[in-house]
Amino acid sequence: MSESAPTAADEASRPYDATFASSSTLDMSIDEQLGKAEGFKGEGNQAYERDQLTEALGKWHMALLHCAGINSFASMYGARSTEAENERAAGITSAVYNNMAACYLKQAKWDKAVYASSKALALAPKNLKALYRRAEAYLELGRNQLAARDIDLALDLRPEDPVIRKLGERLVEAFEAEERKREMDRTEEA
Image (cartoon, rainbow, N blue to C red; front, side, top):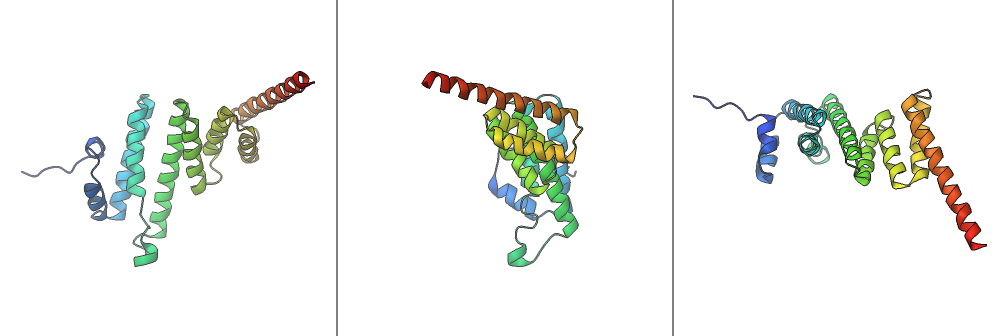
């Protein structure tokens, strides 16, 4: 009687064991690691759609762990992965960070949303969703200059996008509120 291989769900629900994690991914081919990462990403997406945000974040974290280090030993031992595999890992990683940013926005965890969006943008600088999500988080944090920069970049990529334009309108309102507050402060000082 043969045992079936553990599924991505089995591995995600298992308590974290650094020994298991490091030895299991080292024994996998790059393609297997990327397949696992894609599986966890898909499971995270499904959990997000069910509004199970903590579960989604856990699945996405597992996806990141399976993508991590795909080419990390290249400088010491020579690349173990191909350029295509590296690009596939970067694509998965960028998408997962972008998904995590959406999740953090739903949870009103603005700093984490900025972090996750920034990680996605480091891999894909013209990622419209990541620009939008980071701008929205910056806006919520009151970091309007940084929000403006991301909104400008997003509008350069898609000038007629109604969602980005609406966020731009929120930004204008935030700048106007800042100006009104400065005026009130000056009036009170006088």
